[in-house]
Length: 292
Image (cartoon, rainbow, N blue to C red; front, side):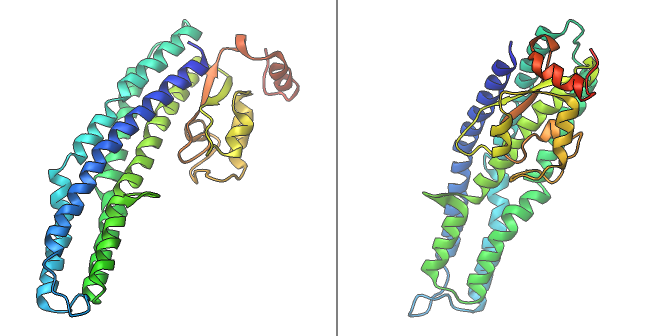
């Protein structure tokens, strides 16, 4: 398997998983919106269609605010996350197939893989099931509910705001969809790159190829590097650069996992020196990075 084939297969796997996940989350968003509308339709309005500020409406507000947890816990949301993470063993298998083709010394580090999987699942739980879900989705939704009901907003405008937040519109995904898909997309790409980097350290590989799917949204940082070969030290030096979309956690060591940053679909794939162009080797011999 070539670096390009590896990147293409993992990219296809992640994108396909994202599409299946999106379909499930669209259903969850619809459930949440319908559940809230069922409660909010009982709000008392004045003659001009504005929400009255009274005790009845404040009780309805409390019911609406508690509905988020009820829908999320009883929906397919958590099951969709678990199904998404089941792609991890396939990513492991693809990476193992690749490394078996470039080094006879490759042996999967089962303890490391288990630790990496455990950390990945913990990250997803934190960002998408616990504190992250509350801060990223629940709190903003409750603010919309509270602000409109307590301040007597227009009922029609209020429902439109709730609908746009939860379900989105033709130009915008619903908040749960956009929030969770962006995180999950990074989770699997970062997981694969983390696996690759660990193996690289074990095998003592020094050269890499920056490769992956270029799209209309690819950053100049990635477009300039796509398809090219680099030495480990050259890649480490990129961490000091500034570019749009760069992850704030990027360091000389983490860049191999974070690559171009948020939503990056590229890989910094370790390669055998046998396929590295001679001019790249000569460049790094001259700079002192590489000693044959």
